[in-house]
Length: 155
Image (cartoon, rainbow, N blue to C red):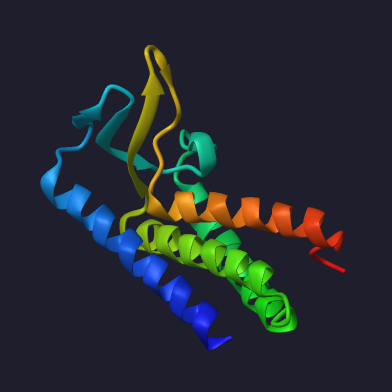
């Protein structure tokens, strides 16, 4: 269990370092063009994925904090129950690290710092961050593991 917690912790550290760098070195709303399809930006998302509820009156901050805390508890419990499934535990560690990273932002600032902005010509994917990336990779690994082992996660 310890190695998965260490992985999650390293993800949190990487996430917080990158977000703090963006916060300190890039003005809000500005962008650095890296490639024709990648920009580094400084956006602040008060909502969840794809800015869900970002235009709410402020209550969403506390709602997402509570949801994150519940998710963190469930993920740790699942990891403990599934220690004999290393790929699943790795996936859960990725999601755990991402959830804690975004929880830290939401708790300290009231928003999540997003900075990776991928696009093709006039088509833009919503900005995201390191935590979001690891959450997405973790979900993909869970799906892969479920199809490979034909076992449901919550059985």
